[in-house]
Image (tube, rainbow, N blue to C red; front, side):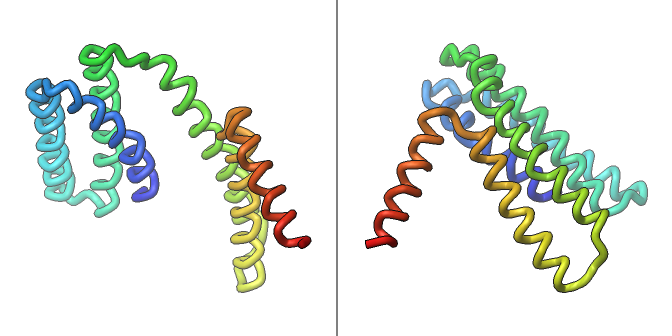
Length: 160
């Protein structure tokens, strides 16, 4: 859950920088500050009612998604940000990479028994699956070309 929250935050930080760039931060800071305060109180209420500790992460993920949407709406107004283009160029490829990298790994975890050998196998499989998903779905044509050039350069250096 912490990784999910980190992914959302890593997407939000550049948007937050763009929102602060025009200097009109009052609406931005008041809106998001209020949402962050609500996160604290929601988590506190859940824990007071006997909720499990991980419920704080669930609330934090939900609030961070809400804050991400609010950030997008605010910068759309402030700087004319194209939200649809951002979703098509960033969110869809990221979601596709996460889906195609995680589903096979979860299937392998469920199908194979525990043990040191299978732990190493799952680790190697998850790295390979993640790299293939990032290359296939996360990169556009120029990104793929850069990776291919880098690999060619490394192979040429090794074979010298």
